[in-house]
Length: 188
Image (tube, rainbow, N blue to C red; front, side):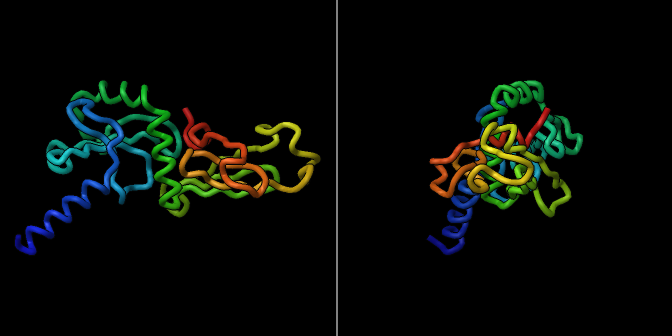
């Protein structure tokens, strides 16, 4: 085996491991995203024969956190309605996987400010926006007064495995309350 052939095999293996297939065989394609992506939720064709050229396609699934499903760059996508229907049916799973990807890439941060957790989404990018989670509303009775907690402020951390915000005392992530981030990061 020549060095060139070995290099091509290694690169091909890397390419396949560097993509997430999220929807299989919808509108004659597999849909997902690659490990180096734009900071904006989307799906694109990830089939070997449709990664580039006339068969490639991409849909945006959000616009600054507002849920959408539209063809990117105005490009016509065959069977777009089928893809939109599948996205609608699988939206929660797609969003949870994207949030996992966001956390891994540092595209989502959480900071406690008083009783409000401020989520910074795609910080430093042209798509950045924020969302606030009022912990008084989420955990009635845990908050006392305007500026103090009954005991001490909770720790807030992003839980990549569960696409959630872990809130509670300084223990393991699994011992804390979890808020589903798909409810907060993306809205209708």
